[in-house]
Image 1 (cartoon, rainbow, N blue to C red):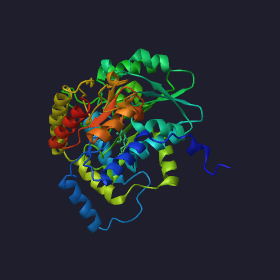
Image 2 (tube, protein in one colour):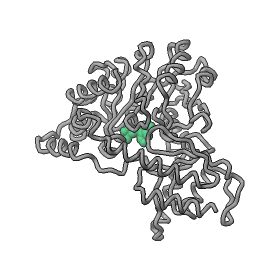
Image 3 (cartoon, protein in one colour):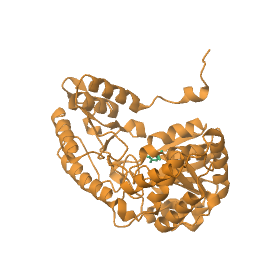
Image 4 (tube, protein in one colour):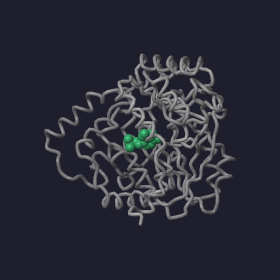
Length: 395
Ligand code: PLP
């Protein structure tokens, strides 16, 4: 008898786990693996945020918090949504969670019934598919390519919609592709959704501030006709270098926020009290306080794109946000290097790990078998060294 639930058995083992295990093995053998696989900034949390956390500890913040977050944190989130996104929420629409990952899991658990379809433009963030599956939904993948900068077109969205479609989930800026929807592009997708008023949209905006365009960030919920059916997900992990603090949040229609509050109350209760206090400092600060990180990412993006343009078989576009490049490497499939044949993205990632001693992430983890993801949340020295080693391993 299988002792585990069907729910857990339905989940695929993460394609990244085998890579991570191999990386650890090679490190244990004394190899100096350069990691371009991380989904987190390599900066320290800014001092003003750390100071707020230290003050919170000294002020004896130690009790359970309200399930959906401290009242003054919810106010700071409301102010942030207004300031950065021109979104008006009240406190009944905000839920603070243990990372945006929990925010997403809450939304899935409260919105998806077994068999409901959830449209995921590919490439998508690695956890979307499995979160949807845990909620017994059916992921519907919509492939995109590097030629269209990994953007789902309105026609593709229209085609993917069926009577069973419950939700559309996407991130913009996108992890892993760095793709960014402009306001016009979001509007065109919203126009398709107008014909399907029951579809709920999850707009994951956690990379909002890591945006290299002059046009700024566009939010789906900022369209009046989308506001009542869009859940805006955000958090402090990426822009504030606070991945380990674990704070994410949503702005949502009240009925969804109430339901998220209810499920979170049973699963985890309120998020960590000290991290919530620190998040108030993060969100109340002007965005200029973190712009040094964004400027650094922009320089590194240029560096890695320049270096990759010289690597045969790597077709790149210029990502407009986040801190990843997602080259199409399918030209290398079927070729052999140092006696090893590369048949797919996972083979290439594994080969680069073993032979170039560089950790990347296979695109298969993100629903795109033509690409691999390289994170440039690493120093210029590491990036330069890593790409040189990749080039040598493929020559
Ligand atoms: N959404 C996207 C697109 C991400 O890339 C990540 C983290 O990698 C998350 C959500 C989860 O963020 P958090 O650290 O707040 O759980």
